Length: 83
Image 1 (spheres, rainbow, N blue to C red):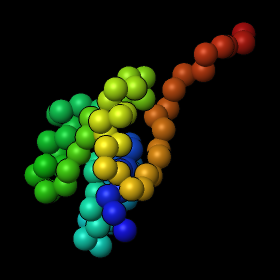
Image 2 (spheres, one colour; image 1 turned 135 degrees about the vertical axis):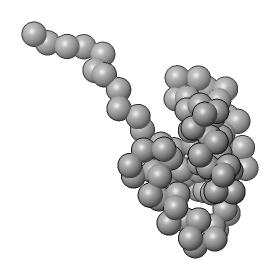
Image 3 (spheres, rainbow, N blue to C red; image 1 turned 60 degrees about the vertical axis):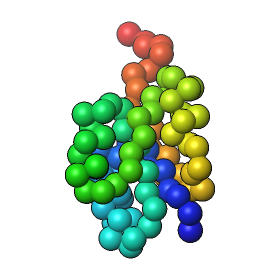
């Protein structure tokens, strides 16, 4: 199946998906926003990649060698607000 990158890997959905994929012995990369969050996965022998959707360089590095993607976007505030 190849390498799978799961974005949002520390959230409710992403963390459960990472665990299920690991149970199936699939090659996973947990997409995380910081080194401190990556530590959680290294303890479970799961590779991780730091990525930030606002920093294109981090995306390029995180996607290196990835064959499949589970894209879970972060919650963002609206650009425009009406009152």
